[in-house]
Length: 222
Ligand code: FPP
Image 1 (cartoon, protein in one colour):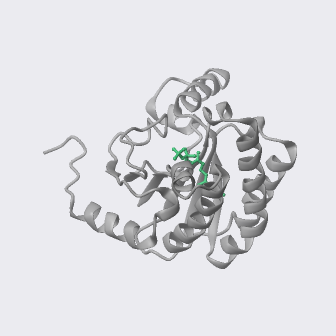
Image 2: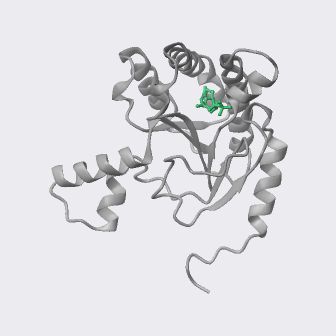
């Protein structure tokens, strides 16, 4: 199954403890590691997509944006061994051409070094916005001179060759989708939890998956 997560609440987690917001992101990155390791060893999860940086996140204070870029670069450098140890293939959706050449290179290297792994595909959404993705897909369709069909359109999305989302989770109590995978969640089950992302645990994910398994999905049928 494909699980997608909107990792929200890092800032509020930090504020609650009178710490700067960036401390929430640091703890959030530790949780990314725990959840990825857990998902890689879960028999039901084949794809895990995590919303790490949205097209709207550039509006945050310069210092926070710079911190998130640095965190991402360090994380990919440090956690390559986690990907290798857990046989996780790393992939990215979003327009990474806006990132520094160094970070783009790090992303490409991580993709290259993990491309043969099959236990889990972890997809980070980076400078990702679903409306931006859909527009880029339409432009690509036109550029390639392809007929407008569902099949061709889907192949032009960043998620070409990745199955649609089965379960969408959002942490921190907000009940909205925030421009995440709008096409790909057409039939997804949704779960909203009040837990802040830095407090999210593999046990809670297991509980959510067990609830998901009890739901009956009809995909528009009866
Ligand atoms: C939302 O919390 C979180 C983000 C915008 C960034 C997500 C980043 C991480 C989980 C850490 C880095 C990720 C990787 C893959 C290393 P928020 O800041 O919007 O929280 P708030 O709504 O409480 O302010």
